[in-house]
Length: 515
Image (cartoon, rainbow, N blue to C red; front, side, top):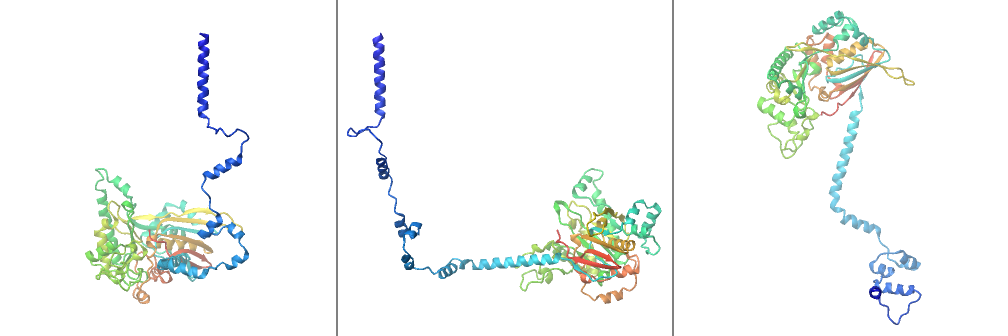
């Protein structure tokens, strides 16, 4: 058995040896193993790879210049090389490749120049223009959203207003409601009444809040009740305007559902701002609104801020030229001008203003938008369903001391600030701080174009309205200032006011774009 086991091991070893021998490469019998020849290996590799063309030969055939070619050539060879005419080559490129884009380049240049001119005009509009100094500030018919006064002296009136007695407060309310003169009143009573105005409704609700209030069964007719009360107020206020019991009032639509655009309308009596007739100004419009007022209510209006009419347009022949100028070529509607400052509408005359009143009275929901609250009415006199609205200025304290500059005490008033409030409040601050103070104002964009320059003779208007009418003014001097034409304030708004040594210096600017 031992021999059989040994025989098996011997046979197994023989099999392994034969397998290893079969895997090794076959060596020719004539060759002998010895030292490795690297030269022979290199010859084998060169025989297996394709030949690489000479770089110089390839450069000569393809026309590509190489460093080896340049370094191997003599100086005479460079002189014999034909020269390339770069000017003719560039001329050929421009005439062939760029001639197709000459028109595009011209259009691009024109657009760039127009954009640069627009930026320069925008920068020029933002730079305030100063009016000559005067003893009284100009009357700005725009609505302010915030004003800030600063003075080296503390605002004692505003600090004392927190602790006034009930008698002083009631006297100020009675004096404002009856449009009494300022001669017989104290400075604190004038301060209180100068911040008062009449408005309806007391609060304007957003669409979501109004929908929540009208959701219950008990309040299902809340919106109808508010609409009825607003129509009574609007009717009474307009009749007061026609009978010279009110000189001016404002109508502002609330922010409607789905972020509908707001609008503002100014109503002025004859003679206000130098305009000879009863008039109204709508801050912006659309083509659909203008068409509806013309076709359904036969209203006639002008668009004083519209661009000049085009020489050839295919607009509606029934529309006036300034309205047709808001239409693009080909008869399509000029939607790019809708709801902009250039779409302002001006109504002049009792017939046209009456038509506008009827449109706003009957189409109030359409004008404001479905699901929104009633418009806000603001006036200097009382009218049906009106409430007394008083603004409360806030003392901000003194500014930090800066080297070379005196400490400035600051007073701020925020809210919807009509022109009669700002004008009277500025007069009270002047009497309380006769030395020096400064005022900076922010204007509501919707009212930025209410200082429209009248086209009629302002001197004839002032002469025909020499009789004083108590339509919201406190005295004849204030009534005279209300009749003054805009002058240099035309199409601009008051940005800031500097008072020093009995003189006002006013700086004007163009209001920001209507949003």
